[in-house]
Image (cartoon, rainbow, N blue to C red; front, side, top):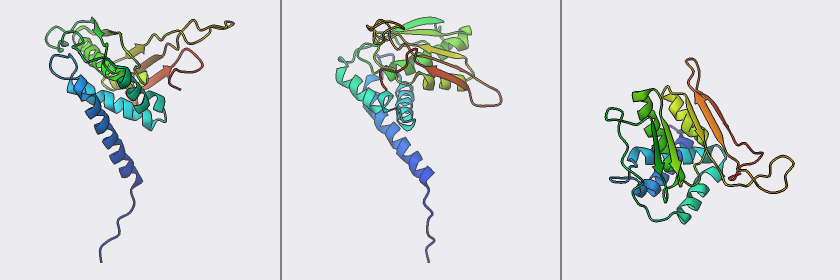
Length: 201
């Protein structure tokens, strides 16, 4: 008599998550490739972050954000020179023009370049210009901290919040995320907006 298989909800969730990551990666993969400065690795990393936002119950930073970004994205064009690797002159300070590129993909490239620069110079700072919504910054800095780096990510947002005592929007939500590795535990991660609400809430 065949044995009855027990239901494994955790395995089902893992498979569903992996399928979501794969679908997102296929969606954004055309933005990466030769001549763009964006690597397949960046698409995989961005897809994981977008799917993780969904898993965290933050759809405004997940698939819906990506769909909104894709609807408004201009035609893909190379976004600056291909990044240097850790052994061939990665710059400690650099910038990426990300016009027409999904924000999480741009963030993934910035994280990769910052890590490569830190391996050479001890520090890596990457500025993203003309970029859209980035997603959950905490996921990016956490991944860098898992690699042994102290990481900081900040973003400027358009005026949407009235300052204390004001009645008209004058400042953005301007999120900040920080992560540091710990020897005996998961990385310490701090991720918050500088306003009471976020644009994607």
